[in-house]
Length: 179
Picture 1 (tube, helix red, strand yellow):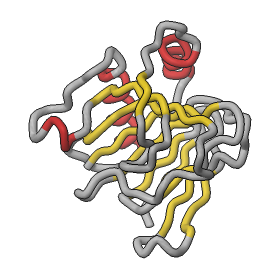
Picture 2 (cartoon, one colour):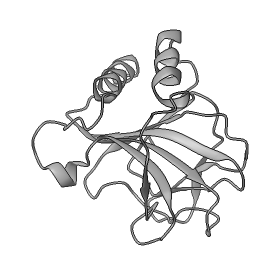
Picture 3 (cartoon, one colour):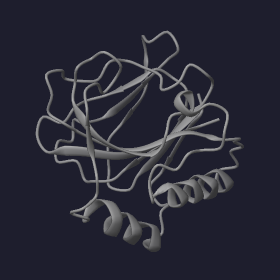
Picture 4 (tube, rainbow, N blue to C red):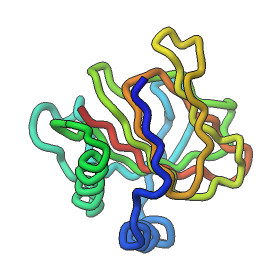
């Protein structure tokens, strides 16, 4: 299974940019979404940076946010460092989840086409049980259980996965999918 965990990729300039423009920006727009995974009725807040590939079609990534160039460059540099080839960004968003009616999200993959995803944990999650779980293709065996840590980056192929909703506090991530 393809999996990368990088705790030291972001430099101080990247961290300052994220802190200034997302974490400590009282005017950062987040919008209520009704489903963490299609049809689950678990609310979360989202800031769409680049619209989903399925919504925009074949054209170039549509930056829906001032953060688009920053995250596009970040992905390019991450892929260069880890020798990952990619053609296009399929999606980029900042997601904030909180205690919900379910313990964890539904098992899902982010797209129906082959892809990889990169997750950046943007806060020190107070609830240390708010992990990301990556499963085998049959959705039976846990391949990885990732503990969220501030500014840790994980990258993995299109495997079924889910995340635990925090029991208290929030869980904020940046998610980029690409192929």
